[in-house]
Image (cartoon, rainbow, N blue to C red; front, side, top):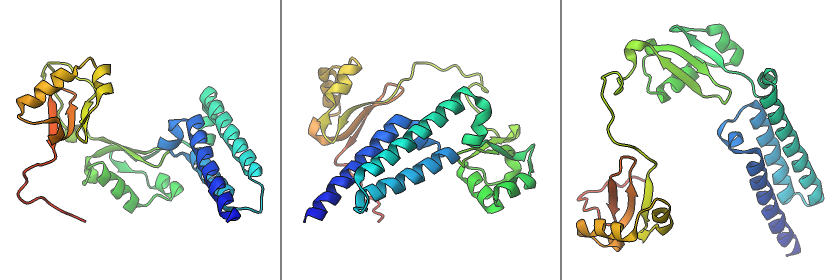
Length: 236
């Protein structure tokens, strides 16, 4: 029983330590898994796992190890920020895979990057024909950035000389799971009475609405609990 309580406490401690470390190192460590971030994440995960379950070693040893790794990772990030020349050693650098429509086989060999991986990454960018690609660069986090040839680029409003009317903003959630998001309304200068009037105009009640959001173009969109779908799709 005592061992179980100790493991429970150490597990909570390990979880809290990893959350604190993630906050210290910042969002970039989570979003951009570079060489440096990968090594840091794997090592800290292993140390945290041992902190949770390895009773043979005192917990504070693992805490010390995590603190040292956090400090080391933070210092390396600061060094890379202040001295750009060190970044390729700390985080690696991007590699050109396709240049002017031509695949650079030597670069792919250096990275052990196969054609299957290239084609998969291109499909994830909605590119199914390699002839559409002008440049493709493998970033330090392993993701492929693609620039299409001019004739395959999608049209945008600027190309058609269309003038954008109105303003856009972040979407504002006003109702969630049948409950009014009063804090969101207050922060965006929206009144509860205004929202209730909008609901009344739809012939609905607050309890009928599962989700409500004011979209980026200012429209108010509701999703109801009862969607009146005759044959809803149910996929497991």
